[in-house]
Every structure is written in C-alpha cells, then in structure tokens.
Length: 80
Image (cartoon, rainbow, N blue to C red):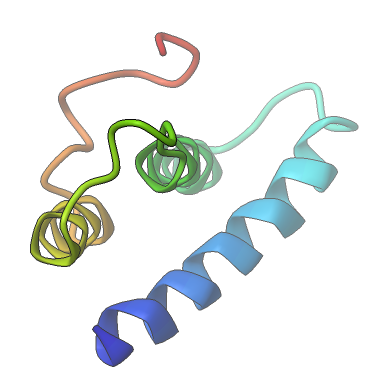
C-alpha cells in the first residue's frame, strides 16, 4: 500500500498542477491530455460513498490498474 500511496501522491500532485494550468490553455498536447484523463480517473476512484467503502485490497488493485494505464482506453475525460 505504501508504494501505491507514494506514487499516487505524485500523480495527483502532477494532475492538480496541470489542471490549474490547463484552465488557461486553449489547446493541450496529447501528453497533457493523458495526464489530465488519468488524474480524473484517480480522483474518481478515490471518492467513495460512506455506505459503499471498498476493501483495502480492492482499492490497491484499482489504483494500481489506473496508475499503470489499464483504464486509459476505457473512459474519456468528462464522461463520468
């Protein structure tokens, strides 16, 4: 969990930094779009309803898959 959490902090920090910059930019390159897309998915995975909390094992599995790009092709940014 510590390995996943450390990398997650870095990816979310990068996402937030690019997100604030992207609000001013009219056109974004493909790499920036991928970082934003992955960041949206990570934030979506982290948010949990109080009544439906996932087990630690499932959380780690979902975060690992999202951070390694397994969800990149499934949903596009803004389709949540």
